[in-house]
Length: 364
Image (tube, rainbow, N blue to C red; front, side, top):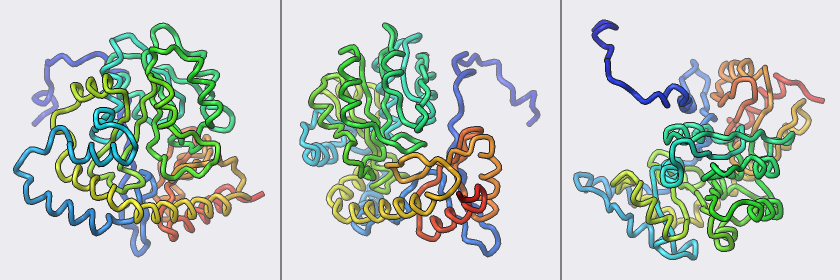
């Protein structure tokens, strides 16, 4: 077909003109005899646990049927684990699916969503698609949330505020004391979303317990995922812990049958096998610590990461480094003009990352 026959007169929303496209991590392409590692998407490098694979295999046999729209078994299992009621838990296609629904139930066109920047690149996308306006507050000099500046950015049009902790892609967590002081300053009717996609990798003593904040502040929602620590990125299961009124609204806004049966069964099996998963998480934390220590003498100011990745603040050399890493068999996630995010992966990939970074930037 020609360009002319492919054209369409259909009117699309003008909002789309300002919506950035999501840039997923590129797949790892073979480079001759070199083993190529994809460390661009913060995926868990371990394969699924046998018990989780078995649960998925059983679910495959009934894929001709719709899944349980209420995710009843998963809801009850997770609620018990978290110490909340079933009507305080809701699910979506990854935590970003839940976030999109949260913005949809709180924002009218022209309302505002406040979040730090740089942070998770889906935030401006899901905000713009509702017709709301993003208010991006720069990170501080240590690549952390500037909570005072975020509080100052709130106006009477602000309906939702996001705190990504640990922050993706830079890594630091907010601290308990500063988060409490921050929330206490905010309007009581402003929905505060604590996005904890990387919660399980946190080891900082002063990192907040988001569920504690949820119990203390009625306007707080906790957002989490099974994609990272649980290793279910390919099945898309995210969840929110919220007051029943918000949960009810989220269930109205959710895509019907959005969380498929295989995903539900895998998540239930993962909760049952959490002790095994925890061993893997701790192994990744040890690897993260090793990588950060190995890069301590590199000529970079690497932030204190509490996630399963490291942030390399390379500025204008970002794209150049991504090319050098690719040549070395590493697919990283560059943010042009700012820096590179690299996932903590297999030890061999981590060793190669350390060597490439030191060779690129030198050491002190």
